[in-house]
Image (cartoon, rainbow, N blue to C red):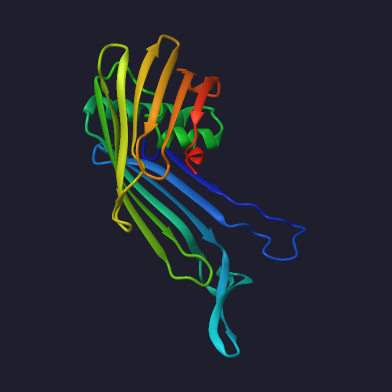
Length: 237
């Protein structure tokens, strides 16, 4: 498949006094380098013009104008965008993720759920694969009104390791280039309960320390059926 997913979204409010056309959302997912690298792209395009308004005694201020940009030969402003590149270092796990993406793309699932599962094919632990290590690079771009563009870059790693046929250790961590700090790190242990899966996840350090105990049905279409006991990071304040 050339694209696992491609979607556009917007709306038009016919009774609004101004700015009737909502920002245009675009997202796409594809595989490159012989299916070794997965790319996920998304962007939000504001179709209206931005102009600098003079203010007496102060610096000019940028404001959004109720005039469609394409009427003056422009496409609008990209107010936010993301690029995510990821690969699984285990070829068996990588092939299974690619197969899952193709099946999800062809399914009749709601678009929002389909986009989530395509971006997170490893959301459900596969006990048949002995180990998995997914490495990803993420770039985020934002450009709000009257502010300079902002770019955030992170790298992350997550995966699992089998202790036995029914037990797995899971892990995830990352690094934030702008703050020069590690992102939220999680450790967990999972148990295969035949039709169910048990998870115990722990965030051992940082501001958002927490633990999460979950039992959920394996099938993705029943993912909302679960038993959960959670200690939130809010309890630390």
